[in-house]
Length: 184
Length: 173
Image (cartoon, rainbow over all chains, first blue to last red; front, side, top):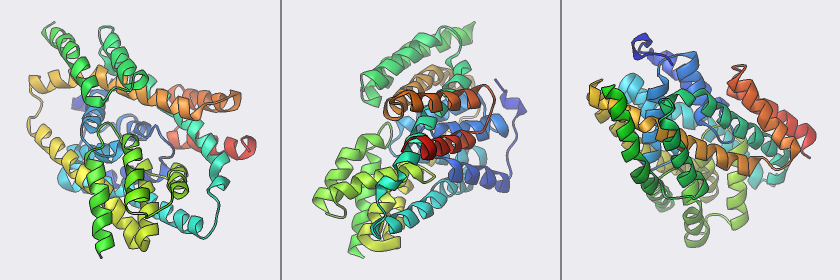
């Protein structure tokens, strides 16, 4: 895991370039993978722990998760202007692409022509999301964090509890584990 | 003009009740845009979601298709602004408040607390994607290859998904 000390504040142009890359290359679910790959692994502007914190907070807040994640990380890296750049880079290229696609669609292009590609993309995105989980496994904070992560997984993924109930159940034991670790 | 205001307010309201991500609000969105406002038909709504899966960016950009149908390109932009603007403003405010606290021990404690929980939530997301995306040996091979390529060989996510798209075009007809 990288350390906060090794990190530097990116220039606005570097921020623009990275988020634009994320904005034009994210397809089909598992989209946190692109943020982690670019911002944590390649640029090293954000640590694994900060990234997980950002993921948790953007799920906790209302709204589309990766829109929130962009604004959040953009703000942490370069303040309000960073947040605006990050969000626009995420939304504008895809927005333009989908408007063109929508135009074709309303001209009569059947949506089903996209089905084979969509099937392949969805399968690859599932693997991609799994890879991000593997890469971030250190963020569980060692063995004591594993049952807590497992509990959150079961409640949110298998039982489909609302996010607030999941957090209400998982955060107290996680806090105790974190507190004991900090004391140690 | 009133259409644009209506587009903005419908999507802004939807986004601000979308806790835990956008997928949860799809049923309510359909009630609003198909039922209450009649901007698109049920089939167009389903197809809008499908189109969002093969264009880049967040899945919730599907609202651009609905906005486009209701009021043209400007409608598309207004719908996106409603869906992303207010929620991102909240996220920005949260990040701003949070970063003002600096790196004191309490902040580190919260971060360590959130870590395992966030990992579990991401795991739940993976599970959903696997359920939706993997149904048979072909898709399982694509998913497995993508996992190994990114996790073990550090290939870029974009490359993995491009591979998936290519495999789809060739084999999933």
